[in-house]
Amino acid sequence: MPAPDAFDELNGSSSDAIVIDVPAGRTIEGPIVIAQHIGTAGVPSCPRVIVRAGADSEATVIEWSSSEEVDALVVPVTELDLAASARLRHVGVQMLGTRTWQIGRLAAKVGQSATLR
Image 1 (cartoon, rainbow, N blue to C red):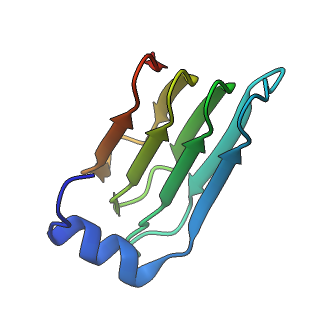
Image 2 (spheres, rainbow, N blue to C red):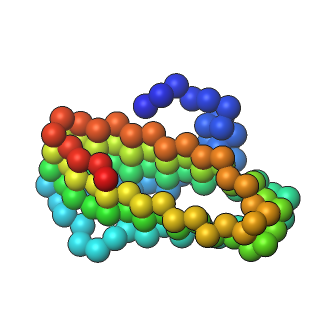
C-alpha cells in the first residue's frame, strides 16, 4: 500500500475500520454490502474499509454511500489486499446529495494471478 497521506491521517484518527477477511479458498456467495449514510451537516464522515482476500478466494464487495441534502464532507479510504489467485469484484455506489463533497482514496495490492474488477 502507498505511504499514508493527509487524508489517511484524518481518516485513521476519526473512525474505526470495517474489516472484511475472506478466508483462503473460500467463495462468498452473494455480495457483501457496506452501506454508509450521512445525515448530519457540518460533521466530516471518514469511513475506512479494509478488504483482505485470501489465496484462491472469491467475493464481491459493494460500498454504498448516500447522504441527505446536507453540507457535509466525506473522506473515505478503501484498501483492497488480494493474495495470490484471489478474485475480488469491488463496486462503489455514490448517491450523495448535491451539497455533499467527497475526497476519497482507494488503494489495492493484487497478488500473483489475482483478479480485481
